[in-house]
Image (cartoon, rainbow, N blue to C red):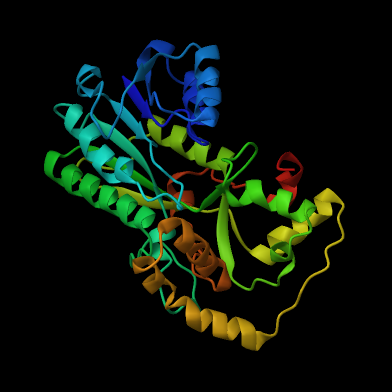
Length: 332
């Protein structure tokens, strides 16, 4: 039995149908949330068209969790609230605990694949070097803290109960039909509106990865029980690193809109990088929805989330991530 949480998410809508190439439909169970928004409901139609088994649960309230199969072979846990402007991220950590506790006895025959995030690494002060799997966790918002708590809980349970655990930390995931508030959904709209934001010479490198590459990695690990029981393994999935200015320039070209950059002086960006270290203090005095723009800016002012790592390619020979320039036409 393969249990999939978050099957109606941006990534999940591709993962669940992709599993059919390697497993029988009767072996796959998709756990959905009844209170899904419009996008989630639309993505649920993909599951229904694929005739994949669906069961409704609520990971926070535990509704429906008593009825899910016990001791599954594989659990692909993608359910999360990834809206960083939200003030409620209980599904990320409390939901993870409730899910694991409902699965019954777990041992070496169970492999849990958890999609995490790299955002809780972005609080570093020195951004002169790239990051990898050994980077220190420094979360600067509740989203990052909740995902990190979930990671630590799963890791501790893995070591205690001796099941297999693969943690996939994701950079900014992009691709066609991304969620409404995501960077790659908003940028084309802002470029068409001639937003000044899209023309600034943002200096910070940020790592991105295509949704198809993430999907391939998740499906790959369902077929390969690489981690040893009780020995969790973690990989960062990244495709390339670009500045916001470089991303915007690529999109301008695809939209056939002249890219007319606004080049702010180095002294301005130097002051912005210095101020970035103090942005987290605003979280204590501002509502999350107001703090979120400052938090987002802190990640692209400097190389806060710049990754260079080949750990995933050492275990996944087919890891050849897509480049934005080659798929930009699918995003516009």
